[in-house]
Length: 323
Image (cartoon, rainbow, N blue to C red; front, side, top):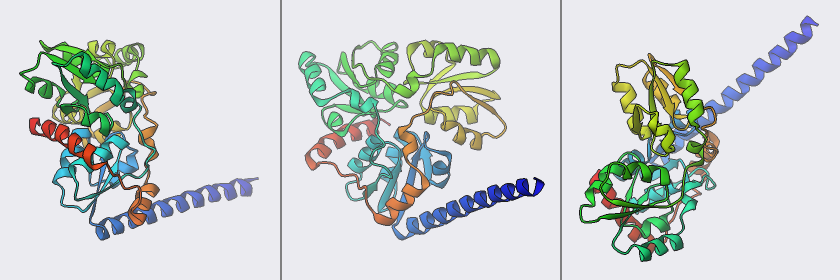
């Protein structure tokens, strides 16, 4: 019996070693191909830990957009969801933008259509259209200016000649912006399913368990969660706030995988997820094998119709000019 247990233990150890060796080989291939292709790998904060670790840069939507525009790399591998890769392709017409999995989509981006937006524009002809970056390239092409959760307030503030704002597609971020603005907001009905799964009740339980923790809530969360927040921040802003804060404990109300980056950057601080349900399945479609494959085969190239790209580029560039 002991010999049998020892045999299975050896099998388990051998299996683990084989897996580790396989992963090491993939990482070596990625690093070799990255150099050969003159490629940069950009990963969103919600990507799997191993994807974050292999990336040249990890950040939020605005950070990735800004970096893709500044990099000298000929190839950009965007580890995120499709609208992020579209954004990179739009502002980098001379570069090849690849996405490891073309099926990595954003449900919120599909909650506003071009036809619906055009109807809103007809109904409110004096309004400026602000589209959240979590939108399709076609919607961006129909909008006046884009925004992310980190610069949304600045973008709205820059529209001094407008009294009305059509904000699409995220009703939660739009509602939050409207609370500190003298403009009239016309909101679409979109939302992020991942952030909607974070309930106020579960957050309250976490606050009882960790009474000394600061509560950081993402702008895509519902208003009930925002009422319980110490800070309402984008993912990039959360990372900076934790690093610069004297507080030692934080409850983080956004997608779970950001905790990997936060813990690497702040090993001396205690970080807790607001809810175990805050996982985005689309962000998990990217993995090391797919990154290796897309660099090796140079497929999954993200291409945007030229006329749509021209219009959408103006929308995004106006956002980047705001900062």
